[in-house]
Length: 521
Image (cartoon, rainbow, N blue to C red; front, side, top):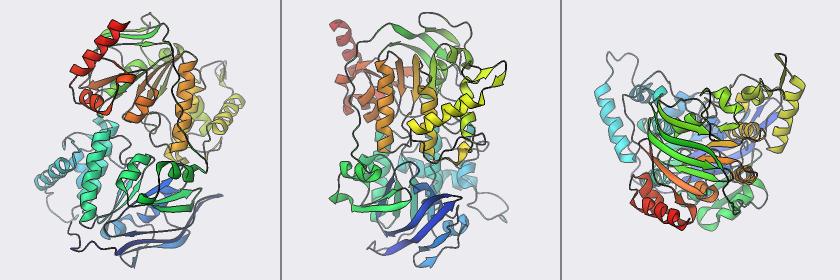
């Protein structure tokens, strides 16, 4: 990229009175937005507020019904992503736009070389990808097949893919949803440096502390319209949260709890890779009425751990006990029958089937239960009623009982999955990245539901890369590094330095705290 030498406040992007409708639903209405050279603008809004739709119009993936997009004074032809890329617009997608059967390098280089070129410059592409990876702290194996990567690693590939195309305007749609706090801060540090040299960014995020630290200006959308614009230096997280949802938002406080009997116990469990990191000698206990938080850099075995507990993976060795008993079979139906609920980390690949209706997705995991079936026939009235209750109680916007779930925004799809799992009243809840992609109001609602499950005696295994979330909900916290679990520390002893050391593999402080807690008991 060769940015202009003078990154003064020159207008590089204008969205002028953009309106976009999907049938009877108006996703964007009369939206105007501008971006200056060297500026970072945050776009905030509730799930379904129209943020991703607006950015998809800018990138040419959707065509606006009304309005215009101009880049450096030139109008972009609607509906042509290639024209947007040539104009210097890059986009980091919230939902991955990657070919799972190709390698990281092949995904990044796709579309970057002319078709008439006799041979691809893979060596040059590899060198450039590695340099970008090291510069941005986004470690990815260029030869790894995307289908074998974790969600966090796929997100890194998306970011690198956009940066590889020499974008002058970069759209980042929830780019840190699967990054640790340290990785996110490293990314922001680099982006701020690039902005100082002339790169312009639109940053979509629900994490208000990121918005406050990374952006120069904030534009707030609500129900498809711009309702506010603020300079970041002249606002606060509290004001932005209120502007987003139209009311004051506070995350619930974790009440005291006395752990009960052991609901789940792993004893020296080993699990092979299964398309993700392996588990090596994992042992832990989960009690009734407590939340055990698991933190770690993406790709260290979190996905495999969640799969182990929810029945997707069986132990190669060691034991997994549910309520003191070894299950007769270790598979998903038996796990669900044993009272284990699962909120998967990837709502698209593991949590839903896009072309099925909302009500079909609602009953997917419990289709054989007496509530939803009788003599092999689905009780459609009961399924529809349950779906309507979830849409109402969890504020799943844009959803209809008979609508395809793929038409929902990512956050609203997540709300439906949460309702499906939590309304079943599981005894053991595996919550993997439960608030990923949710706005601040929805996050507060999810946290309240998880605390309610803990309060009624469920054991919650919370797997999250959001340290604020883990600290706010957990009773004890462990780190996972290279498939191994650290000693557990009480949440009262958790601070950024201690957790950072644990995630980096330094467990000396954690071991001392665990020993201290055991001695106190």
